[in-house]
Image (cartoon, rainbow, N blue to C red; front, side, top):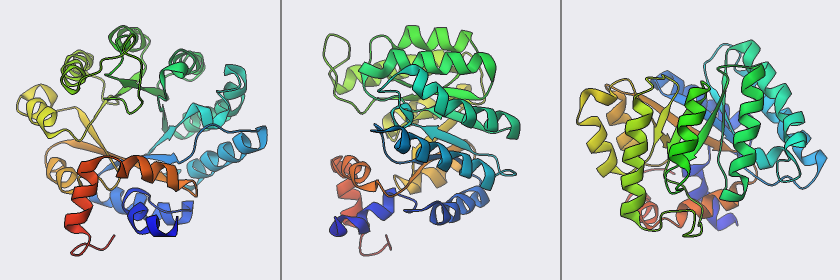
Length: 277
């Protein structure tokens, strides 16, 4: 575990909010938007979910005057138990974000939670409009319909490829299929002209296609903290760029997921000596 921590520092902004806040302020100063995530999912008890809730409320208290977004995995607030339980923990966070002019994006987990995550977002959007957004995955067949329904309700979207292994009955299996559907969804999303929508990918082929036209001049592009920092800086010159910034003590599983992507391993290997991690 200790052996992985030097690598984790590339992908995790710190184990505590105090450490993460330094990175948040640095990114804000550079002109990035920031989406803050407390790493961890699948709360096993009410006490764990309450701890997560308190931490997100603390973030909102700490950054009252700085524009940021919370990025929350619903299972960390009890969604695996029931929508009602997750609702009871998420509602106070959403209310506070509404009062302070901040926003929240619900992360999408595996397909067993898609319906409940969407329902949770819709319920709170009725009470707190323009606060909650949601993540949509281009690897799922259903996403085009979900996207259109959610946009008709004024809910903002973060578009990603999808990181969970799914069944071929419900999801595209090949890289090209997922990429083609991503481009289709990105084009559909662009038509709504919502400033809070975001295209989240590190795929340079996709990015080159999108930024080669004027259609995406007002689109926000989002990257994972620590991944393709060179590309983040490059796009920031004339685009709105967001950074998904995770932090927390449960950094191990998140780091392993990032290191499992061979491009990240190759990138780190090339830069580990010349760049301080």
